[in-house]
Length: 386
Ligand code: PMP
Image 1 (cartoon, rainbow, N blue to C red):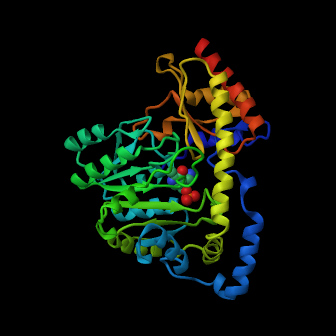
Image 2 (image 1 turned 60 degrees about the vertical axis):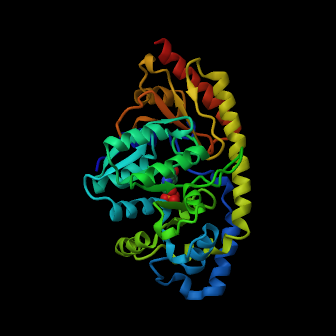
Image 3 (image 1 turned 90 degrees about the horizontal axis):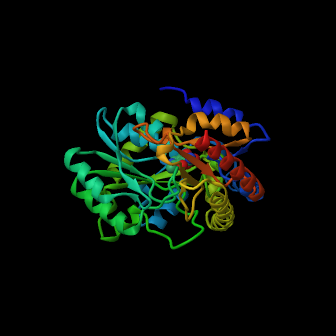
């Protein structure tokens, strides 16, 4: 394991005068503080000391039942985890043998690379474009490089904000099935759509043809982090029983169970607060995204490309490759002008992407977004000229 240099630089961006688009955090002013306080009181009244006692490794049954009912599963096909980050780690522990080929998007979620890396897979990047993974490229790769697993964030991806089209989802399911590849579908942003039509998850599409859950080649991760609050560390993995059974053993060894109190609180919030929060958060993120995308169009030099997400928290900027700009050293110049972003390179398993960066639009006000993007435009301009 190595410590991340970028993490060190980003510590500087905690200074209040810096407008930071670097964070991966949800907007804290939208957390349902009062509702969580009320739910906590109700949990104490209803459960007493049991709310603070050890509980089952699989997770609180009513919570698993709610998740299972929503997805057409049985509760024993759902494992509660401490954040989906733990789900990634446990899946790595259970599924990866050293040297196994694991396909990942190019770029992909950095935290997944970090979670899987200790289990020593061989990461192989799959080519992506604006609609996500390119099925023809995947098929070509699988012909020469058989793979065990493919890790995908198909909806409002971190870091790009891109969404895999329905046609491609169907193609990917068909291709992976034929080649015996298991899909790990990570969906923390699925509910945060602010534009366009909902796209079914790979998991839902795989179930739609009548395949029993236990025979699926898709395992899905979900989380309450972006729709309630990430500090609750409440998330889940859903999939075939043989995988979930192994996850239960891995989870027991890792931390016995996820916090009892938090699971009880989340269960209280499911029917009422959760749908309301999803609406509030999506609408607000949509407004902030529009301000950022419009400011980028006005302020960034020609030749700079940016994704235009329909949901989630991030957009992805690509500087012209022939300009030779490296966004890692450029970050220091940006911080000098009181604006910050995450350089894109760490999101690539192969270490490419020196010309890319990730911007979050959710933790700044509209005014800050305008000012920050103007400053960042000037930084890029300087680099192009200099
Ligand atoms: N997967 C992806 C794609 C993410 O962006 C994140 C959060 N940054 C996680 C998993 C982890 O989320 P949590 O552990 O809070 O559920």
